[in-house]
Image (tube, rainbow, N blue to C red; front, side, top):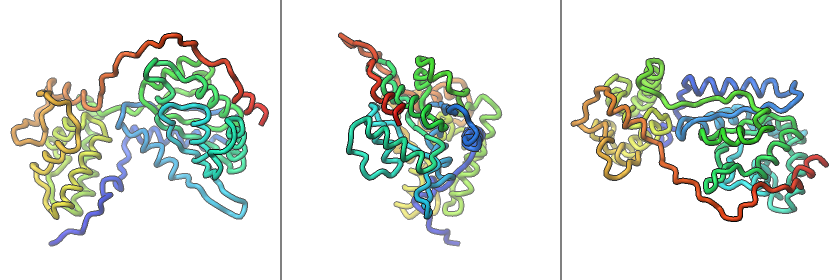
Length: 340
């Protein structure tokens, strides 16, 4: 029997909530629900390695509280933005004004943009700010916090008394620990870990996630059972336990099958998709393609250690800067917020 034609977005359309995902969304929902009764800002950080699902948490949560328009005007309950790569007060204000659908975000001074943002958020009933890629608030060259932007954000949140949720790499925790006032406003962070095959609960959940993806894909393709223990270990070795890498790999599998007009996906097809989807440092002999026929899907320390290096990069040492003067003492943006 001929199967249905698969959608290109098959993998993206398959949302598979798992325990860390549900924990994070539950914490955000609680903060949002109690945002009306707060006397001070509610701040929380979602922290994890790259590709652990932090951005998906923010996107799905924001989508659950969509922008609406009524006779009274635009209602934007949640402002969801991505931090600029090198955030300045002006750049951050413009990014947030764009998220508020402001048509004049490029006009006016830094102070004008700040006042306009505060007014728009009050008028649109914005209760929560979500900021992804929060690690951008740390200058990579000097490993120092960009204090002007961080102070501006702290003052903005104080002024609005809204909920602030930031998501970023573990390095972003330094933004909070280096700023005493910021740290005091934040609740304990929500961690989004990579799955660890050695931990039974992690392993079982990882296999269950693969089972959900297999159920979705099997409506369109005949393919090896992804949640079979041996196949699941192959997927783990190919992704390092990072959900983002699993979806990246499976997306490539689907694309290749659609391009080739295939209804059957073989182990060789999975091996080809792995080579195309997952970047590996040239010359490494410990990261074998786990879908090759020569690969033995039997867990051992060597394979698990190699898998844990997937998704990790070696950061260059910070560069010293001559004549650095430290953080700016100007508080013009704070004054603008206080005057609003």
